[in-house]
Image (tube, rainbow, N blue to C red; front, side, top):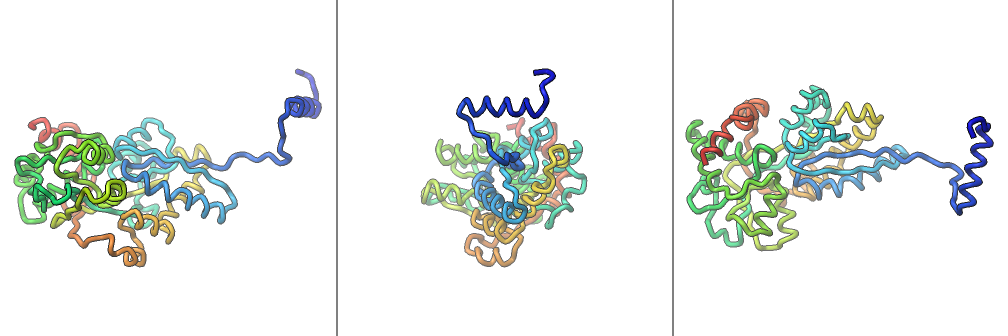
Length: 339
């Protein structure tokens, strides 16, 4: 058919399709845009509800049907996967440090934190303690995690955001009480001596504690507690320490990917949707602390008042914290290898 006229060729193909019992739509249309949200370990349920709500909203506003896929794992592990080529349209992480790394690689804008409100973090949480019913080890505050005989489940700070927040939460609790760096290091060292298994991500740590029945206390995000209660009922209790760390969930468009795939408009709309009344309401239903005062007031019963400190306030920002504590050869490596 090398020299067959185009119209004749099309009629021949159509005849073959119809002869085979196929159907050809009168107005064939290309599939709508497909986004990939690469996110952290314990945000699965949140985005499972966010995605269909966004799809309906975007369809109403743009007339386009968009598909959203999601990928979850330890926050830092996920960020490295994106850096290594995973074609994320957006990243929704649990620490700014992971997005900074992508910005350093040229995948995300250097000023990504200014692209959306509240330092590009529509939600935040904090670290709390999940203990077994009756709190048999009487865990009340960070120092109790360091007591002999208390087995503590914490994911690896090298790969998991909640592992980092737990480490920094314990360290910062000493500083906020007027303690010095040596006392903070001593507390964190004793806590990690009590960690029997260093899981790679937050959900794996939850599984270790709840299903494998290992450990006396799980340190986890406040919003993760709601999933545990829903799935396992009254077998566990939540303990709030006297102070804890503010754990923001920052978001960013992956510029290199969306520009190549021509997805900037839906990708940006997706992240803006997280700040919308519907997006904030869904976040609050999943026990995230949200930016909308009205929504926070509506769901006030979900949140116990707690004194929160920030990474900037105690550690000079994520870059400084990463370099000192979590880079190879940093404080965590020294503490854990001495275990």
